[in-house]
Image 1 (cartoon, rainbow, N blue to C red):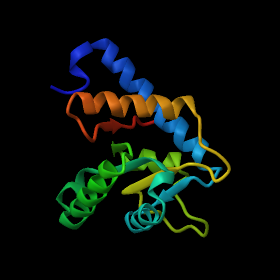
Image 2: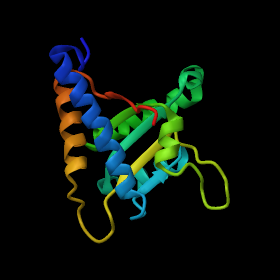
Image 3: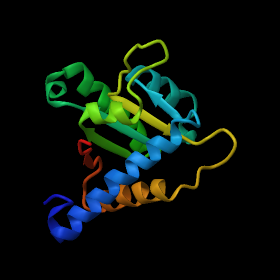
Image 4: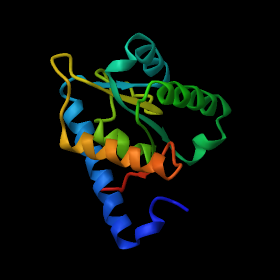
Length: 156
């Protein structure tokens, strides 16, 4: 049973709402400097200050499923996040994720979007309704034994 099955149309609306909330969180966090991208950068950030991380996104496309090294990194990051009570989401559609995050580092270098962390702003604890919706979705998914729910970002 998947999270979408129990409620039919209501589940579809809920997933649309969660996908929109994810976009809102990312677009709000980006100008605040609260985004860390890349598997290695995320691992360093998690090691230094895991209490500051509010959300971990693990993103893949179809060809990434066969990348054993990436899957091992994902497994380790997931375990660390679970141990430190950090919500995790799997995201399909890396191209859309790149669009949301403006896809490029300064200087035109593309980003490794396989792992994206959202952290609290330095000034205060972040109180965002979209983030609260994502946290609720993750908590509800864990109640259904889906420890790492999947979000399919729609094309625009």
